Length: 304
Length: 304
Image 1 (cartoon, one colour):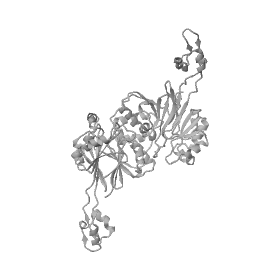
Image 2: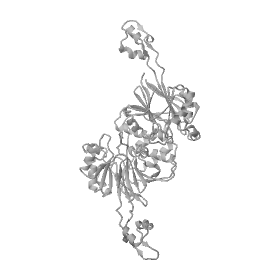
Image 3: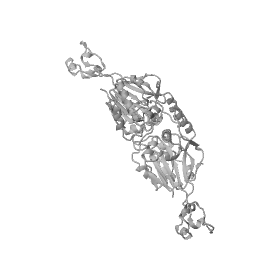
Image 4: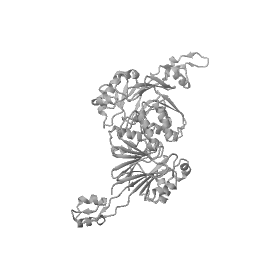
């Protein structure tokens, strides 16, 4: 299987704490790096955790609260100063484009590479991008301002070689790549051996879902049904439900409930309020609703 | 003497390195905290070095390159989220005001305290602010975009009590505060004792000068003559003079030369290029021109 992993760079809510940066994480799928959200300090966190800026070709921004995008102008400037020439795809709410242009204007600077901007759809679910490796979908979240979640879905998995069958049929290893892609085998003018005699069905496509920031809203369940890993915000403990509702955030208990309803395989909770010095109580609260829950923390890697 | 000290929060040039944040420092003068420049991550650095956000009442921004102000929207948002009500004075180039307003607009947020904005003068030297403790002056620097340096000058120093004279004249300690401010002493209907028989002249007012970013330009010398501490950028070693000139920055050797010409008491160099892993060669180069040079580093405190 190709690598598909999520590295947490920041999991704080709006007010950072000494050991938690604002929202940012990087998804590596088959060597393609997708940055999701880019809070202040993200470029330093990328340095700290050894993610090369030149390897990031996609940036997704969920919404325009400062703790989710204020690291973006600095990150793009640094990429440009380092001589980047490869294009970069940026997905986010429409006003983000002008904000970046205004920043370039007042700083009298420019980005020295192509920035392809794709406007996220904040009112309905929509596929926004696809390549040979993955597809990116956005879906609406219920927050104080327009906000989307994201799905990253492995596009096509490779079929699995049956070594004994290949050996018996005399298929050379040099043809294995084609076999994995589903091609039949034909040696010279000999008869064709159908692919399904030499390979097994691939694993199902893995899916990662990102939900931050949002109030508890069961309409999200349809969008994230059965995903392999769900990252969901859990800003407060449930005793602060009233505070969560006023600020359009979720409690740890509610995050667990959403994961259970969506029947996801694993849940990672994050976006913690700085009032919590230890996070185990949030974990316990979420686990009471959905056992397979883990805490996001800076530098932690979740492998799908 | 009242405290007058500068704490370095960031001393990197535009591209940060793993252990150096972009420009920011906080000046504490008599308990008033003045933040100078506010690169990305400054609010985290303030947390790290124990500077309470509520104690910062002044922010000065030298120019609008991202590494000098991209931490500002996040810092102001956090101050507001923490319930700040005290007004804050912000000094910087004119376009900064609209940039912050636009950020508030797209993030649908507001600053819950009064922000008094004072436009810095980028074409001539000018006193911009004064209170009982200090005055702030800006002066033009020669950079790629409009940029100013800043002087912070202790406004008036307290006279020094002569304990023996006060004891002989029977002056109670409860009157010492007035004596330090220069008032004469009169007990009931007795004769007045002139202040200068009870106190000595105060120390001369201390001055701190901040010069970042700038090309080598001797016209700055008049503005920073005889200051107690000069912070001057030293982005490159002198073998990269050509690079320094193209990018409108200064070499360590040139920073030392400016300090020598201005006959300042101490020089701190900073704003180092991320290409330098060790900084001693920059220090040695500056010291060859001006012996009393020190390196800025994160968390270091310079006391005037």
